[in-house]
Structures are given as C-alpha cells and as structure tokens.
Length: 461
Image 1: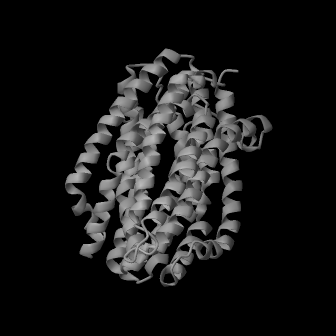
Image 2: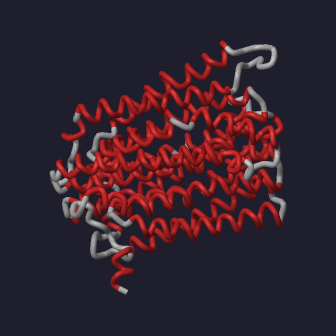
C-alpha cells in the first residue's frame, strides 16, 4: 500500500541519477500526452468514419482558432509549472501555497473571458479564413460548444501542470486516461448512435475534460502535507500574480504567435480545397502522436530544471539537459522510422478514400526528419523555461513561425502556380513547416550554449 501511495506522491527531482529521474517522470507524461492527443484523434476518426470527409475537414479547420483563444491558459499553466517546481525544489511552503491558489483564481477569470469572447468571434474568424461554405456551419457549432464548456479543459491543464511541478506526473495521467475512455464512449454515443454529427464530438470532449479537471482538484485538496489551499491563498496577490504572468506571458505569446501563423497558413490550406484540408487534418493527427515524446521530455526537463534551480544545483541541470536531449533524439528517430514504414496504415484509420491516404502519406514524408529536430528544440527550450527564461523560447518561436514559415509557405505556393495548381502546390504548407523546425533546433542550440538562462532562477529570493 505504501508503494502505491509513493507512486502518486510528489517527487523530489533534485536527487538520484538525472537521466533516470527524467525518464521516470517523462514516461507518465508521454502516456498522458498520447491520451490527450487521442481526444482529437478519436474525434477525427469517428466523424470521418460516421459522417464523412467534410466533417473531418471541419474539425481540422476549427483547430487554429481554438488554439489561438487558449493562449491565456497556456500562459497560466507554464508560469504555474515553473513557479511550483522552483518553490517545491526550494522547500518554500508559503510561496508554493500562494502560487497554487492564484493559479486557480486566474484560471477562473480566463475561462470567463473565453466563454464570452469565443462564441462572438468564431463565425467572423472562420469567414475571414475562407472556410468553405460546405463546412463552416459545422466548424461554428463545434467551436461554440467547446468555448462554452472551456472550464474543464482549462482547469485540467492548469491543475495537471501544478501536479507535474510537484513531481507527480502519474496522478494527472490516471485522470486523463479515465476521461479519454469516457470521451471515446461519448463520441460513439453522440455521433454514431444519436447522429449529432460534429457538435456531438465537441460535447463529448467538454464533458470528459470537465471530469478530469474535477479529479485533479480532488487530488490537490488531499495534498495538505505539501502546501495549504484555502480562501486566503485563492485571493489575488500582486507579487505572485506578477511573477506568474511575467513567466507565463512569453509562453502564452509564443502559443499566440504559433496559432496566428497556423491561422494564416490555414487560409492558404483552405485555398487548396476540401481534399487538402482533410489531408492536413490527418497529417496533423499523426503528427500529434509523433510529437508527444518531444513535448513529454521538454515538459519533464522544465520540471527537472525548475526543481534543481530552486535547490541551486546548476551542474545537475546541465547533466540532465544533456541526458534528456539525447534520449529525446533517440526516441524521435525511432518514431520517425516507424512512421515512414507504417504511415499508410495510420492514414487508413481516418478514411477509406485511397487518394486521400496517398496524399497524406506524401506530405508526412516531407515532415519526417523534422521530428528529430523538434526533439532538440523541445528539450533545450524546456530547460530554459524551467530556469525561468521564457523570453528566449518566445523569440525563437517568433523567428521560426512568422519570419520563416509563413513567407516560405506563401512563397512556394506563389512560385508553383500552374494550370493544374492555380493556387500553388499544397506541399508548400509542409515544406515551410519542416524548414521552421530545423532552424528552430539550430537557434535553440545556440542560445542554450550561450547560457543566459543560468541567471534567471528566482525561487528562494
């Protein structure tokens, strides 16, 4: 019984062999990230199979707008994770308690804003992006349901971030697996059984995510030995709110920049027609799984770095950064090879349309080597964020997505226009993404070695 309790307890990552602690912490997050990705993948498979390729395209076209309006939560989650990790590593109960309380309050405020703004801007944004008339109604209804029920998604991500900052990546995993299974059951019920179509997918996701958020909150309320959670801690505090926003805002802006670039590129994708839109959805769903190890090791290195910076163990951080990056690259290389070998079978899960499967596999081959580059990017940016340097990753994202990706995508499309491809070749979208990933890795290596991140820690002040 004590062994089981230990598995679900906060972990001190300032002790033990770095690569072992990073891997132990990353594995539950990897499984959790895969489960999180399965939310969207299950949605795509079920609407693609039971409703059709246009329904599949509508779910994909909604994603950039959804991501853009979620930047508030990204900022809170990143800032919270860094502060919790550093204060936990510094063994500062008071600051840790205030941080967790303020995260809960700020999330409530951000959720209220999204619930009001989201439904208002949805239809105009979709029209601005040239979303085809055949799918715009589905996209609109899907997004409105998502935004009205945004609280569950918001609180799960914030509270799971707090749990990971405390070194407990397993509890968040278990709660997510429960909600993922529920999501699939509800998808099948609402779409296949009740014929609710695309809106049914959104409703299933909102309900399942709400349950995972409740489970995370219950877990936190039981962790009284590590911090205090009461009305006093929930009250907004200028000092802690400022620190959280200062740390989280660059990451939120990074997500906003990335989402805006996706929206601009989505407009280009929409110009290629429904087949390419559906292809993009399939590729991005497979891409989501391929990226999961990179995100998991990046998040693990953020927590590892945060705790060790808090404990003032900079040499241990550098050792962990090297080990974690090498492991991430090894895993990414393996996954890339598996995608190249078995990719067509993966694409076939989403649709029976042979031309769509072949087009999707063609695009995936273009992206393949980029996953190895992203392993480097996510690992090193994770270290910098964990140390409190969230500005550098923001600038790198700005350069790679706005300065590089968008002009390259539109440039290639422009210069490849022909009678067969009046708006240019659709490969432009994926070639531009590959270039931005590779350059991102190169720039991250440069700034990590430059070392300004070593002077950013604030815990224990």
